[in-house]
Length: 184
Image (cartoon, rainbow, N blue to C red; front, side, top):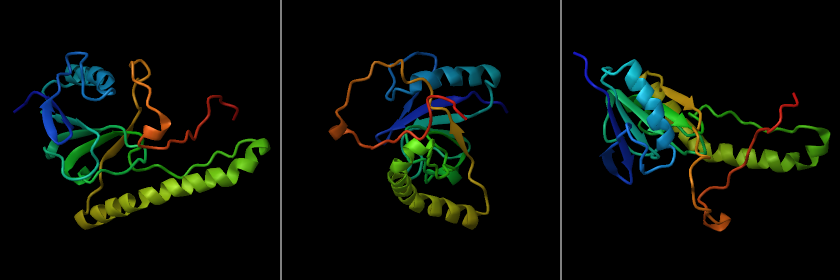
């Protein structure tokens, strides 16, 4: 029997309703963009019976599990596979869905003096991800199932009026491994 879709947020251990029909306020900046995305989902398949849970958590069980649950995982810069990936139908994840390959852009020979630093930083990132990757591989093998983790674009956060956070107070060091120009 068809059932209406349901939307929740799970932040700081609290499961709340997520009213996707509004533009907020939301407990996380990216949810404004994803509310628009899930309005389209509701238009295309309103009675799919999905329960979408938006969160930044990657550890522990998700408060709702099953084949009807889609976890929208936001803001994990390391691109780790969440612990609950085997307990839900799909993890839709920004900033890498666990398949982040090592990448070092060496570019032109003029940039090569910085190459050892770039390689060292990427090695550090991959070593931080390694326990998560091993845990996900062990779950896949022990449960004889693939983990459905989908990479998503980050959305449009640039339009949010966010406070400036001093570098010393930020939780993560982030490196941009890309290009603002396409000279390939």
